[in-house]
Amino acid sequence: MSFDRGHHTLHVKADLFVENRRRLVEALRGKAQSGSWVLLRGGVEQTRYNTDADDLPFRQESYFFWTFGVHESDVYGAIELDTGKSVLFPPRLADDYFIWEGEVRDTNWFKEKYQVDEVQFREVFVVEDYLKSKNASILYLLEAENTDSHKVLASAEIDGCNIPSDKTLLYPVIAELRVFKTDMELEVMRYASKIACDSHVDVMKTMKSNMYEYQGESVFRHHSYFHGGCRHLAYTCIAASGENGSTLHYGHANAPNNRFIRDGDMCLFDMGPEYNCYASDVTCSFPVNGKFTEKQKIIYNAVLKANQAVFKASRPGVWWTDMHLLAEKVILKDLTAAGILKGDVEEMVNKRLGAVFQPHGLGHFIGLDVHDVGGYLGDAKPRSPLPGLRSCRTSRSLKERMVITIEPGCYFIDGLLDKALADPELSKFLVREKLDEFRGFGGVRIEDVVVIWEQGNENLSKYVPRTVEEIEAAMMK
Ligand code: GLY
Ligand code: MN
Ligand code: MN
Picture 1 (tube, rainbow, N blue to C red):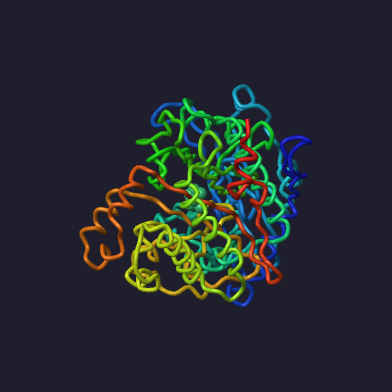
Picture 2: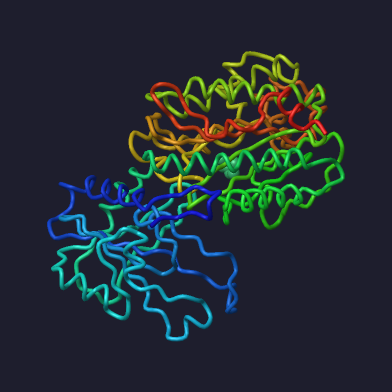
C-alpha cells in the first residue's frame, strides 16, 4: 500500500520509508552496540487548549515520519539494529472509537500499509515488555535540538523502563541522513513544488488592486488542496503587499495578511504546500496589477540577477556562506548602478552593508521540514557572528542530493536604514535622497527550491514566471 489523495495526486510507495530505514540501519552499523534498538515516538494529536475540539488536522513529527511514513497519531516505532527488523506500536483504541472516529484498523492494515515487519497494539508496558522479550541491550533514543529554534524534541522515554538508553548516538546520524534526499524523496518534493508553482500562478492571475492580502492566501490554499491534495501548507503564508513586503516573516498572528492592496503595490507572496509531509517553499514577487514600474524593475531585476548567479555558482564543494556573499554583491552592485548606493562594493560587503538590505540568510535546506535539519552538521563552520551571515541556516559546503532554497531579497526596512544612516561606517555608502524615494517600497524576494547535482542543479520551482516580461505576460488580464 502507499499514500495518495486520489488519482490526480502523486502515488507515494511505502518503499520510500523502507529505504530510509535501510539507510539508517546501515549508517549505524559499527556504531551501535549489538542487541540494540532504535526507539522513536510519533507526534500526538492535540486539542484546542483545554477543550475537546480538534484544532488543526494532525501532522506527523518529521523524524518519525522520515523513518516510518506513518500518518496516524500517537504511534511508537522500533528498529532492531542487528537485523533491521521494524515494529510499530499504534495505540490500542477505545471500545467506542468506531462510533466517533471511524474504522478501527487491525495489525495487518498497519503492517501492509507501512511495510513493517511487525505490529503490536500498545497498552501499558507493551513496548517495554516487547523489547525485553527480545533482549534489547540498549535503546537509542532521539533527543534532537533544532539548530534554528533551539527547541528540543522530546525522546521516546518509557516511564520506569530499566533497559539502558542512549540519547547521543542517533541524532547526528539520522539528521545527516535527512540532508541527502533519495530518488523517491525527490519525486515527492518535485510534486510539492509543482503544486506550489501552479498555486502561485493561480494567485498571480487572480490578484488585482482593491483585494485583501488574505484573499491571495485563500486562493493559494484552495489551489494546492483542491488540485494537489495538499492538506497542509509547510508554513504560515506570507501574503505581503506594499510596505509589508519588508516584514520578513509577515503573516503571523500579529500581522495576519490583512492589508488592502492598492494599485502600484508590489506583492511578496511566500507560500508553499507540503505533500506527504515533504515541503515546498516558493516566493513570487510581482506588481499587483501585473505591470512593473521603473523603480520596481530596478529592485526586482537586482534580486533576480542574484538568484540566477547563485543558482549557476552553486555546485558540489562550494560553501553556502560564499553564495550568501555572492548574492549580496550582485544586489549591492545594482543598487550602486541605480544611484541608491555609492562607493566600492567589496568594501560594502566587508562592512556588512548587505545585511541592511537582506538581513536574512540566503536559503536553507528543505525536506520534511521547510527549514530542514542538518544545517550545522557535517563540514559546517561555526555560525558567524556577523549580520546577515549569522542568519544563514547552514554554513556547509554543498553536495549532491542536498535540496536547498535560493532566496535572495532586497528590502527597505526603515529601522535598519535609520540605523545605517546613523553609522558613519555605513552611511558613507548611502545616497540619502535616493534612498528616501524607496522608503515604503516594501521588498522583493525570489525564492526557488533547488536540488544540487554535479551535472547542473535542478530547479524544482521552475514553473513560475520569473523575468519581468514573463510575469507581465502571465498576469495580462
Ligand atoms: N517561508 C520562510 C522561508 O522562506 O524561509
Ligand atoms: Mn525559505
Ligand atoms: Mn519562503
